Image 1 (cartoon, one colour):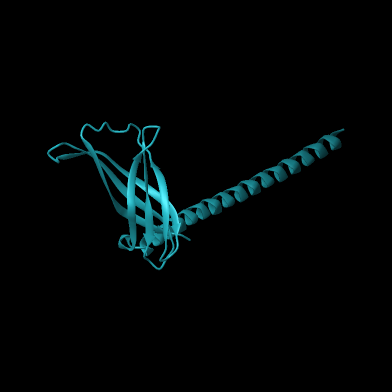
Image 2 (cartoon, helix red, strand yellow):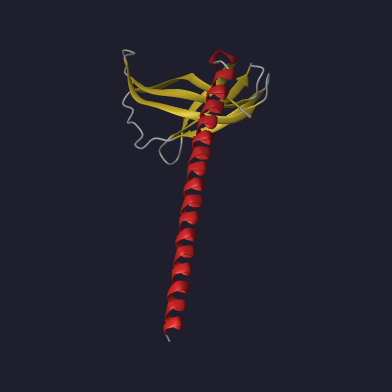
Length: 162
């Protein structure tokens, strides 16, 4: 009976030793994969940021024009901005960032800015061409205009399409 008990202890020892070695191997592989995965995620984010900076630098703001710009009230209480966007650059335009200011002007032509928003017009415009656009101007609470509504915009950024 003793030889059988000794054999069982030896077998259990070998199995546990193999299981421990297997567990350590799995932990090492999992750690390695986690490090490689984290490195890849960091690299992808860095590359995306670099590409975004490049796309934003390709088209100067002066190469993009907006004509016939209109601000129209919508049924839901907000506004829609529309117009024709021209791309005078050598690259395809993917989007233009606009700063929209809505003003409430009184009879003496003194105006107060009651809304100041940034919106992105996402419209692919090939070089030397133009596209019409209409986009909602999302306002949490539309301003109350007591006098005359006036508005203006400026192009504050561009992004090339890829």
